[in-house]
Amino acid sequence: MNSGQADPVREPSELVGDPSGAACDSSATEDARVASGPMTCRAREVLQRVGDKWSVLVIDLLGQGTMRFSELHRAIDGITARMLTVTLRGLERDGIVTRTIHPVIPPRVEYALTPMGRTLLDTIGQLVAWADSHLPEIEAARVAYDARHRCE
Image (cartoon, rainbow, N blue to C red; front, side):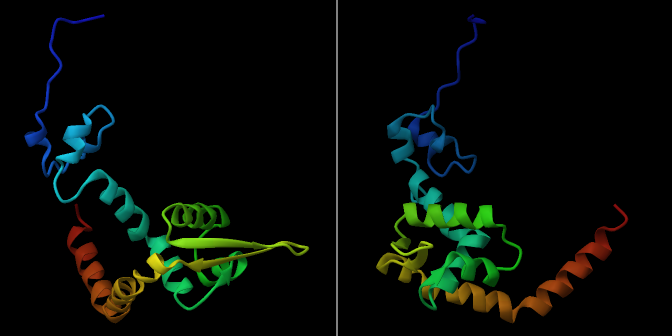
């Protein structure tokens, strides 16, 4: 039923740099999505994948060499088996990780970085090193923030 009000129409130029993500909205035209500037929908999807906390840890670990699921699961504190499965599938889908099933009983499944995945190691290594080296400062900042905002 039409209420008599016209739906708002966005011009592609209005969508450039739109932080709301409207340019990625499925109702947006293909032209609008293409015109969304340097942070395209597809780039955002990839950055969401490689930038989430679990993917960063998985990529960092696989940078040390091929690992089995159980090795990854033991090495990543706090990750559930389901979340590790979802993370590995997404990284495999994006061409960052390979999954190799060895035909033995029981089946042995190994994960490794692809050549493209290895190109992320320097960047992720820097991010992990930065986090490690700034943990005391971050903790102090959190304590100070919490103390300031406790009364609110």
